[in-house]
Amino acid sequence: MFQTKTKTIAMSYQNISAVLAAADLTSILTKINEIKALLPFLVNLTPDDIRGLSKISDKSESFVAKALGYAETVPQLVPPYLNVPEFRKDYNLYLQLKSLLQQLEQLSEGVRDTTIAVGSEANAGALTFYKSAQVAAKLNVPGADSVVDDLAQRFEGQGNSGEPTPPPPNP
Image (cartoon, rainbow, N blue to C red; front, side, top):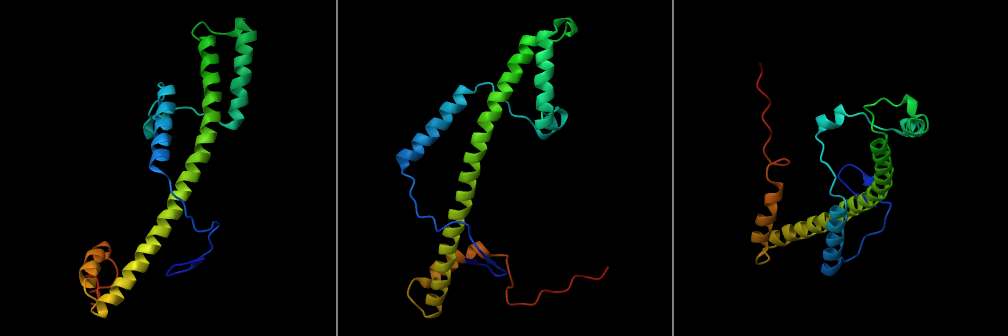
C-alpha cells in the first residue's frame, strides 16, 4: 500500500529492488540500435499524416488479404495502375511489422510501468529524507538548514505559503 494525501493505493507489485549493470544497459542500447539499423525504411509520421492515411483494423485486414488474393488469382480484374507485386510486398511487410509491434509494445509497456514504479519509489525515498531533514533543521542539527533550503526549491510556488490567498478581483 502507498499512502497519498487523498487516498491509499494498493500496488500490484512488490517493491522493486534491482540493478541494471552499466554493461547490460550498453548491450541493450546497442541491440536497440542494431534493430533500428535492420529497419532503415521506418518513417516518422506527423499527426496530420496519420489522420490523412487509411488504417487497417482487424476487420479490414481480412478485406485486404482477400482483395490481394483476388488480385493475384483473377488478373483480368486488376487495373493497369495497380502494381500487384508491390501490393503483396506492402501487405507482407505490414504483417511482419504488426507482429514486431506487438512484441515491442509489450516490452515498452513493461519498461514504462517499471520506470513509473521505481520513479515513485525513489520519489518516496526523497520525500522521506526531506521530511527527516526538516525535522533535523528544526532541531538545529548542523548542515540541515542548507540541505532543506536546497531541496525546498522543488516545492517553490506550490501549496500554501502561510499567507491567505487574496480573492480574485471583481469584474
